[in-house]
Amino acid sequence: MNLSVIQVVLYTLDRTTNYTAAGTFFEEVGEGNQVIVLCHGVGLDHTMWDRQVTALAPYFRVVRYDMLGHGRTAARPDVSAIGDFVAQLKELLDFLEISKLTLVGLSMGGVIAQGFAADAHERLEKLILMNTVYRRTDAELKGVRSRLKITVDKGLKPVADLALDRWFDDAFRRANPDVVTSIRNRLISNDLTAYSTAYGIFVEADREIGAALKQVRCPTLVMTGELDTGSTPELAYRMAADLGDVQVVILPGLRHLAPLEDPPQVNRVLLEFLGIDLLPSRTNLVPSQRQQEADMDKALFDKGLATRRDVLGKEYVDNALANASEFAQEFQELLTEYCWGAVWGDETLDRKTRSMLNVVMLAALNRMHEWELHFRGAIVNGVSRDELKAILNQIAIYCGVPVSVECHRIAKRVFAELDGD
Image (cartoon, rainbow, N blue to C red):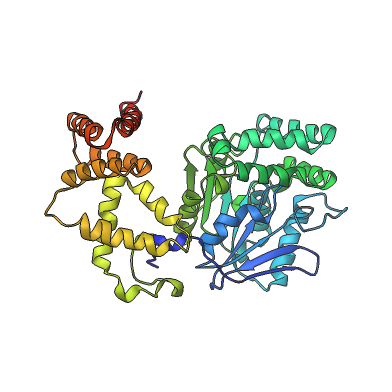
């Protein structure tokens, strides 16, 4: 499939929420022929996958559920092993009449996925193991055993705070206080007995799982964060050693809850592994995106996208497209096609000249966020530091000293980054 990167934006479909006969809460969305099932980590619930569902639902039938004793699924007093959670998953699949699936599990969800793979590998089309564990050593188990003891002795709040410290760095916590608060509330609202039981099972799961991954016969993606101290890159490669058809992805700079820390990056990895081509194209759009297809000039759009990436950076541009809301989607298309394709693509003025013009115009308008982007773009397009210094002097005279001071402040930071200071 060759589908536009724009398709990974938020996608709205009718959702089905219900309970299985055995009482497992689930939510189902999407109408694709392939089924994706998402299994969360201990102490969390199905909502941790919100940003992945919006990316996957345009292409797949997506099912997510709450594990035993989590979220809206009640605890059971007889739960004592990973096998009980695997049985829960099987009951859910049978209830929904799902015979073949791609299974995605994070942390304890990944351990459940391993148990399922060992028992029912013939039902798996693909397997995705995210930020999870496998055949841990005593040294690797020391931290989780310590946290289990804290939970039993002191309750949920201390262990929740320890989890947040491991899962999110200070920069993420400052930038995303709502996400951090939501996760903390989810953790401390768990039933203490149910949480302790599940966590204890997770701690001792290696004995039960053993070398389960040697039973896997399907393509498998193993993904974790570079800075995940519990589900380390070393553990990811240990899993890979017992798998045949495997791809390992270590996400730079991320920790344990990668789907929440950097949804665009995680979603791109998932979609590419699942066979969705994210190369930009105007063809094969989903129905909700076809309304203006007749008016769109593919060559101009592709030309604009290439120019926009060259000037502003591929990562920035792809994130802007991937994170655009449904409401802003047409604007992003318009911007790429006409601003970057038609105007920037007009060779009457070279890119260096256009960058110099933008640096001046955006300063005059006091649009400093955009100014920084185009200041960086000017450097990419060959504007020298001496030329930039002269431009900032011109801005001071014609646009005012205060805005020039702000330009110099941004320029200093950008140059420090580029120089490695």
